[in-house]
Length: 599
Image (tube, rainbow, N blue to C red; front, side):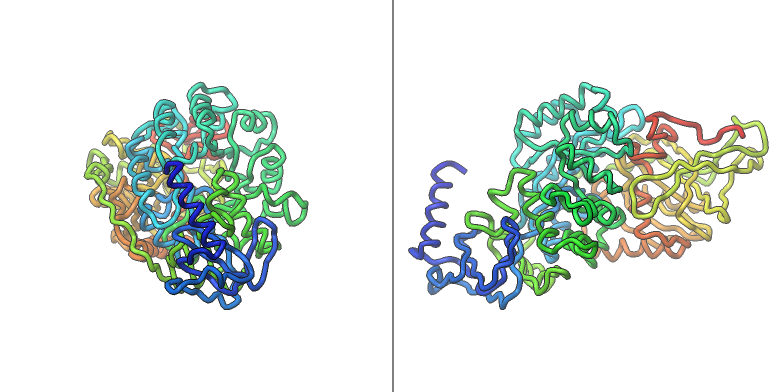
């Protein structure tokens, strides 16, 4: 907007505040959750003009005209709209529009999204597609330009790449808020020119550099990483992680998504150690569509923090004002105050934090869990619907684990170990028997196969490894093309024929997630947009996604949200062990290791 437009708006807000003209709507008699002062102020009215707040005080009668809509708060709490400081909409398997449809009833009115999933498939044109859709939404959606595409050059082959020149271009687009999570943390502390160039472009643009330090070492590499420029980090899982980040000037982002439950350990930095809570932010990072539709979003993370002993107003600050100030948008969002967007929730209690009314950009956007605003229509280009190229029909032998390099009848296998509700994995070692030149699945020891099928260039490459922790107890296979960050196809299973069937069916439908048990498909969700997102409504996606979770359980898996765990097993920037299209990666050493070793 130009100076004249902004000046006209501010004068109109002043006229409403003075009673010279009428408000469009007035919320009457609520309890104002004032995150800027830390108070709850009873008997408060709020006057709204267009999208903005004009007045907050004890009596807004002077702003009420003949056409003013009255919303009776009836002593409910008036909470600022919730902000998610770090997330990937692709993890919900939803388009931006459908993600917003899912989270708006839960009180989310602002998103800071990093589309590095789609960037790994389509590069800058994929990011542009997300930015264009984000600009159509009835809530605020800011986009971070992905920083590490691929996430670890030399350790994986992504479908596309993003250069410092791409970052410089995107930083000029409307709607870009900063640089996405800097996942290549060794590149930062080892002075990789490309990583530092991307951060330099962001600094020069005056925008925020997102962090991602997944290493447990809080010594010199961590200090060097912070010196390099990242300003926040969501990869902490321990109390000491949160403390170190805040002490070094970062914002500690405590995530509580579908599978990453990192709030409990880290919130003790505030509740027990007394650190200043204004430097902590709640976020979700990765949320499954079934979680979003049926359980909640940012409000779910706030509830979790409260359950761990945090004061409700403080927890709400971590999902509103703290986030807004970090990204430099507190002049617009993150608090209920004059001149800000009228993003306001009416909730009966702060502990449950289930909104009965959601006002976004001045309009009633959701009532009693139902969206009230028209969602935008967005058409995706044809190229976005054609990205899964396996190159050939796969069969059971493609998923055999051969052992020709090992001379004896047994070997030591390097095995990926699942850690429930956390993104890191363990590097396990199992003694395995060799029969007829092959290593076989071992259900008794919870030893299943994991295979990565290259899907961007149709090379036909299949890398096979071993994984422990899913708890499968019957023949079957589960496949996904949501496989951070390069998003090849991942298949985990206990039967090679079922694994082949799962892979071929995913290729046929253009990507998605699938469960095969004893030769039959028992769960399927099609994700034709980049092999990552559905073009169906959020509730439909949630129902289909539930068939995947049910399928995991049918195969014996009892993990919380195991498909989120599966989707990260190729993420070669989070320790300790991962699989890529190039082999097995020891992330602590950032190098390849053999799957099998001599005893």
